[in-house]
Length: 313
Image 1 (cartoon, rainbow, N blue to C red):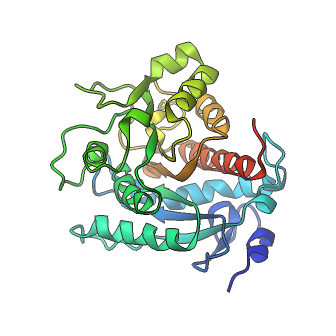
Image 2 (cartoon, rainbow, N blue to C red):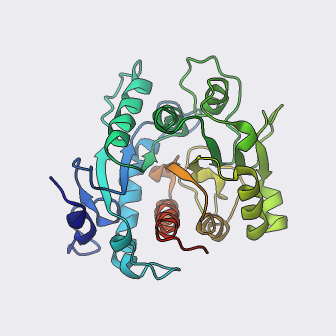
């Protein structure tokens, strides 16, 4: 059995530019009963409606996280020893066989369900955004209906027939199935039109640009309150200047500084799970999309660390 102390004390000694990859160089193991946080990859992109390639996202995010691992004992900007505060394990990836799509929802749900039976918190790396739907099913089984904090260029509530594999309609399905409470949910960075907001508080990208990071965080916390919350971050929430490596880029999005500033300030929210999706490295330039994705997850881990320690930013 892997002990909690072994997870806390695991420090890879490989060179930054070489060696075996795991997220933040954490121990790659499926023995996770002593972990505070488990990271896993969901390499699925068959639900994309434009450019594929997000199945390679988990590998790219892991590679981009290596440099952050070097600094995690004095993690910026909090100077928290992240690895002494949270026991983090990398579970590896969900096994998805190419061409076998009929049972993909069940396969991803079972993968997440197995992890959540053993560990309190799961961070998943997609994959296209459809993977959030089965992840939500597994989290709701454990925690009940959830608030959704959704960063994206798109609302992802377009018409859904309850059967289709589509990364643009699954949140309407999740709403209809009672997985999420729209009145206690927020969508941030939106710059696509929808006939209805379905009860979500929609914070469009121009509002963030005009009102700023602090006002955005205040509005998020006002709507979420103390409700159990799942955070899903589609990297196309960012402007393509900051995240070109994605399948459906939309101009006018958040900067990396805005996104990180918001995420760093989310302490005190009752988070129960998180995912990062739609990183498609084939369209990236100089790995900037993978780098910002890894940084967002890293800074979200700092939020979890502050919450665990009882600190408030």
